[in-house]
Structures are given as C-alpha cells and as structure tokens.
Amino acid sequence: MNVATAAPRLVLTGITKRYPTILANDSVDLRVEVGEIHALMGENGAGKSTLMKIVYGVTRPDAGKIEWDGAEVVIHSPAEARRLGIGMVFQHFALFETLTVAENIALALDEHIAPAALAPRIRAVAERYGLPVDPGRLVHSMSVGERQRVEIVRCLLQSPKLLIMDEPTSVLTPQAVLQLFETLRRLAAEGMSILYISHKLEEIRTLCDTATVLRAGRVSGTARPREETNASLARLMVGNDLDDAPLEPHDAGEVRLEVRGYSLKARDPFGTALRQIDLTVRAGEIVGIAGVSGNGQRELLAALSGETLGEHEGSISLGGRRVESLGAAARRDLGLGFVPEERLGRGAVPAMSLAENALLTGAHAGMVRHGLVQRGASRASARATIAEFKVKCGSELSAAERLSGGNLQKFIVGREIRLAPKVLLVAQPTWGVDVGAAQMIHQALIALRDAGTAVLVISEELDELFTICDRIAVLTAGRLSEPQPRAALTVEKIGLLMTGATQSPAHA
Image (cartoon, rainbow, N blue to C red):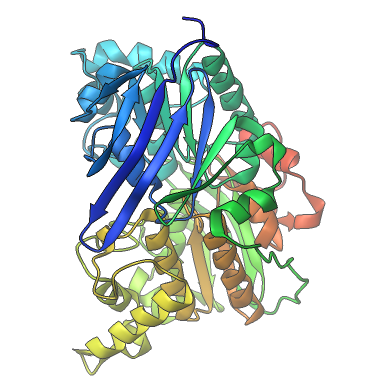
C-alpha cells in the first residue's frame, strides 16, 4: 500500500455519547492517517477514554459514524475491532491476578495457543521493545507498572494496523522511552497508525505528528506538536495558562521517618528482596525515589506503611519511635498518611461512595466518635476534597468506580493531604492525571512540605521528581542509592542508576 495515497486509516465523524449525568463525547471528529502517530490530549474527564472505547468496540456511540480504511464500519465488540486490526493498551488493566502472564495473554488473543507455546513469542516481543516480562510470573505478584508492560506486550503480539496506547511510558527509564519511541517510529514508517494518549507534553512534542485536543467532550483544537511549546499545548487542553511556581528552598526540621539497615526477604518467587535500606526524611522536605517498576518499590511501600510485617533486619522509626512491628492502623495513629499506587482496591473501594472512602482513612479526624460513624463529617470532608482538588463527579455520594482514573487519583491524594499527616508516603502521585491536575497535586504536596510534613514520593516520572523533590534516590534491585540534592543530579545520571549501570553508596 502506498502510504502517501492511501485512504485514512480511521475517520470519526460526529461521534456523540451520552450518559445519564454527562455528555461524554459531543460531535467529535477525528482523522488518523496511515503511518501517522496521532496524539489525543485532554484533561481528565474530557472524553478521551470514552472515545477510544468506542473505537475499540467496548462502547457504542449514540450518533456519528466510523470509517476504517475508507469504508464505513460498525464495531460491535473488541473482538471485531481486533479482526479489523485495532489494538488497544488500556490505562486500567483487565488481567486475572491468579493467572500467569502467558495465561493472561493467551486468553486475550483471538487465536488458540497454549501458554507454554506462547511464552517464547512473549519473550521475543518483550526483548525487542525493551519491556521485560516473565511469561511464567503470576500477575498478583506484579506492580502496576509491570502489569502495564504485560498489556503492551499483549497488544504488540497481535500486529495491529492501528495501535492505541494510553500512557504507555510511565513504567520506563528515559533510555527505554527513547527505545520505545524508535520502535514506534519504525512501526509508523512501515504503515502502522498509532493513537497516542499521554499527559506528557514533552513526549507528545517529540513523538507525534498531529494532536487532537478534547475539552469537555468536544474537540477544542488540533495542532502539530513539533510546532508548539509545552505552554501552548497546555493552553489548548485547559483553556488558560498554567502558573507553574518553582520549588523554593526550605529548611528541613527533625527526622520524621528513619530507616536503618532494613532488609526483607521477597514474599513470593517473583518479588524483590529489600537489601540494607538506609533512608531519612525530615519535617519540611520532599524526598523522591526513582526507579523502574519492579525493583522493590512495592515491597518498600508495604514495609513503610505497615502492610507487610515479617522477619526482617534493621529498623523503621516514625517520629523517633520504632514501628517495624506495628501494623498499618497503628502507624496511621502516629501520623502516617499513605497514597498507594493502585487506585481501585487499595486507594479506594470501588463500589463505595467518595464519602465512605473518605471515612476509611479519616476515622481519627472527627469522622468516628465513641465508636459511632459521623456520616455528616465524612460527607463534609469528601465535599471539601472534591472542591479543593476540582474532582469531576456527581457528588460526594458518587461511587469511586464511576470516576475517571485521573479524577479518582485527585480525590485519593487530596483526601490524604487534607488529613495533614506528619509523614506522607505517596506512590505515583500524578499517574494518568492531566497537566493541570498534576500541577495542582504538585503544589499541594509542596504546600504540605512547607507546613512541616515529611513527604516521601515514589515515582517513575523523573520530571515530577525534579519538580517537587529536595533530594532524590534511586531504587534498583532492592537497593537504595544515597539520596542526593536535586541540583546535584541530572535525568541522565538517574537513568543510568535506574538501569543498574552505576551504583552509589546506600546511605542517607
């Protein structure tokens, strides 16, 4: 096929989708050419996910038409979409936790192939695209980032003509991102079309040929990202300029969180053992931990939050008190706050309302008195979080599972920040949120630090760590490098530490 003269790969005309309380897509037009890398941008709740679900056959539009390779089609199901040549990597995964990687991928493929026979193909694709995946590993033992790799590999195994990628680089080192971009450009040159959904403006400007921007369900504009600046793209997304206040120097106070010589064996065959972790976080500072997912982040957070108790070496102290033998609730009593990386299931109970989810971590903030739940207080707290963090939802009675991923993230982070903890652990604070919401969360974390809270942030977003952290360390294979002042580090240096190519002393 001559790419230059071929019919467009995908054309959407007047796509409209209504739900009882929201108009998700309002007469959306979108055109993706053969061999084009096309960005789809927009704030959380702008309608991007709904639009992609329509393309992938998960959701039917109320109005509008879809053209594929020049012919009008009606896509009734994901299986039909895959037969056309459409592959999609979802932001929220659909994996069976009790099955292995190979078993999950075998179930997702339209061809019937035994997991054992599929394993070599998985390894080959994973190696080719720089996405390490063990076909025999059980999904329940994997972090969110590792699960995302599984979804990407699954999709690439199907050799799609249109690849829809939703936030695909959040699990990669800077070097691996460059490798993935080279692969995507090669695939595009061979005729594959790519719809790329990302909130990372620099990525979009580097990779994408064209961008379509959604705002409140409508197309607010199109752009050629390489001809734009980050500021102009952000303005298209949110409708105004963003005021990105720089991180000001701040004097740190007493040690609030101290980890000394902490080692913990892996709890499952695919887990990561923690080895001689040394770390201090002081009142009034933000310490960041970088690293590729699967290098011990999950185990370290579980150890610090009190979710994992077991045989170990070393100590963990909160405010000068040894806590390594105390559970999560006891540590919260001592002033620990925690934002886990998994939104649904750990950060929030899907079927429960936002008010009920506020109660889960706010029992000691006036929401439970003398053993009685104060529903008025929990509803008021949820309303305040919704207002302060601009969470798009029906009300505080909306179920957590009804919110978009970014809006639920804003609620969970805001809920913990408003409790004003003495120490706050935050995993992936802006995973999947738009540029405006990310800035809001960053400013709230900095304000919390300035108010005297000790903040520990674990993130795979290096730009984020450089934006908000006073000191940064790198976790590789269960070992923590020495936290260094942000000014002493570069993205390249951290990237090398993340790959294990360079080691630094594990002292804080």
